[in-house]
Length: 100
Image 1 (cartoon, one colour):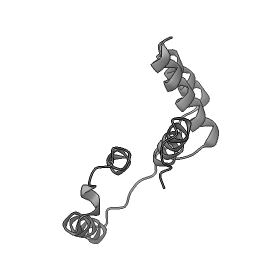
Image 2: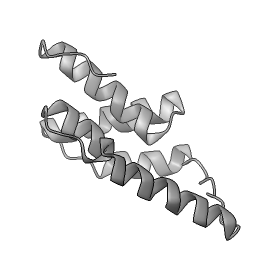
Image 3: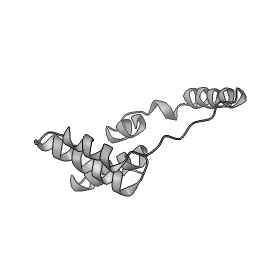
């Protein structure tokens, strides 16, 4: 997500630096050697979604939040893919460039 923010603001992305990529790769290898594996999280239920939707305000930001929550729940996607899809759509709506 941080990469996407840098991309949208046309700033240099720190993740693209060789040093950061090497550091992250080294950290992943070390964790793997220690036997650490990422654990998948359970998806939220419809009841949990309804509880989240109730917390959204009635203003424009609340409408946006409800739309994103419903979109993410309906598509069954991951957070990163939801953010990418939403920011791509927003960029196209504003006439901005399309991100990849």
